[in-house]
Image (tube, rainbow, N blue to C red; front, side, top):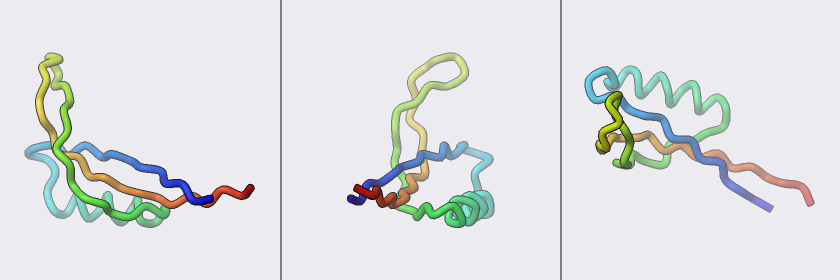
Length: 66
């Protein structure tokens, strides 16, 4: 049976540039993850205020033996 494992990587508004995204994708790709998309999700800032942040969505297929 196939199942999928997902990982969300928070993108910082100023610090996440194309080079750092490429680095994350290369690291996670070596672990078997593939890029699914970028989603805007609700999160909390350092003062616990609700804000929207962009997250990289990564997916990894896991086969389970029955």
